[in-house]
Length: 595
Image (cartoon, rainbow, N blue to C red):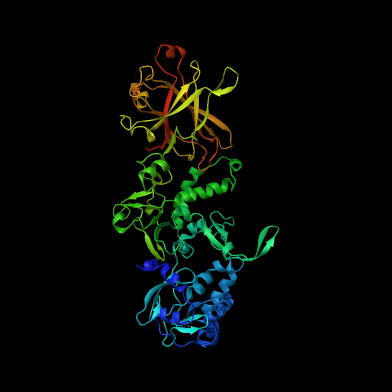
């Protein structure tokens, strides 16, 4: 397959650094037959060859005539006028000038896709039996043979021409530019929508002028320092590189020495998904006060679209052909059970992992595939063929572990003997022993025992609930643990059930706090509901509950969505040892509702 060309990577470049051009050592290292050492630079040779005038005009317009006339060592592959016309050269120059000022010269598509696609750093000569992979100046890998490079052939007598700053090869036609996955998006009009998102902030490839993920990064090591002013380095020539922070999440889609498959929605599919998913990322009107970067609109915009692309990229390093017959692990998947527990609260959840991906109904079925230099884009043209179910991706179960420090937002307070305010509950993390019959039944095998400091009052503990989607129906549970899970010799008093009620607290669209009593009273020994005092009980608080606004991605010290759990035990019930005011809470679960 064409994209496997990148496999040979650093060996050539490292070897190339060890020689001095034109020396005896260099001649011995490279077996190619050099067609004599010529006077002058590569640029002079190109400029003096009338059949390379169109190629020369592009080099000159882009400023690479100066580079090819310098002392730096290059290997250049120059197409003749026969297959690279003056009209083609003019079109490239016009496009270079159109982009100039909007992007750096280094990121100009003419420089990357044409100029640097015909130049390699260092000398690469060829022998009669030569066949290897070299790295071009734009980072692309190309197959260099004794008779040509890529799909271009060398003209007889124009091979291994040595000049004082490198080698010149004359080729019969320009070298085909082979885009990587990220680059492919800007070359396919069916993918304008996903391109517009991934390139947000790029003045040429997006209609959004504000960068979200695709930003310039200053490279001081490649910039020219001019001195120190006011304690800071001043640069005469500042070099930047465009980088996309999403690549850390999706995969290195612009890296030539990686191999990915990406399922990409066409504009029609994208439009339908955005319209559907936007409702799940509706934020309160004044959410801007919580943001250090961006605003409400950008939050909705980016999270809606991230919900589409997350889980659509597959690294071939852990998705070989044989594995894909069974399932596909996207780059967003958890690769181990421990990671599943850490990411999603349960090792039974397998978000972003898709079974039978190549079969009808699978996420890779009926796609239009386009080979790229680092994998392939698998384009989905029809919304009916988009087989990523939101219940497999962003519509996830939320598990709030009681023992996590950040989980508890508040607890009931009281006054001690010195009139100081103290919490009226003490908390103790209880670990379930591996020999207990409850081991594996309690989430993470840890729960929290909330014991009253003052025996005569009921108490409340409030839990933060984060990453809730708006307009998404949730079935909500509080999971309680029995005293026997802490101590197999627990006394009858310790094993008493309790009575609970629950209140959901959330913000309305205008940012006002609202409380909703979702459960007035439930006894944890109510057998009619399936609750027993010596069992791990999943106490259902609400069914298909929908929040008007989302707090997805808002990490606050006190979450705007919370759940208050309180005891409702009377003094009489406590005195008569019928119920206890001690709560043993394992976790809170918000499970997306299924019809």
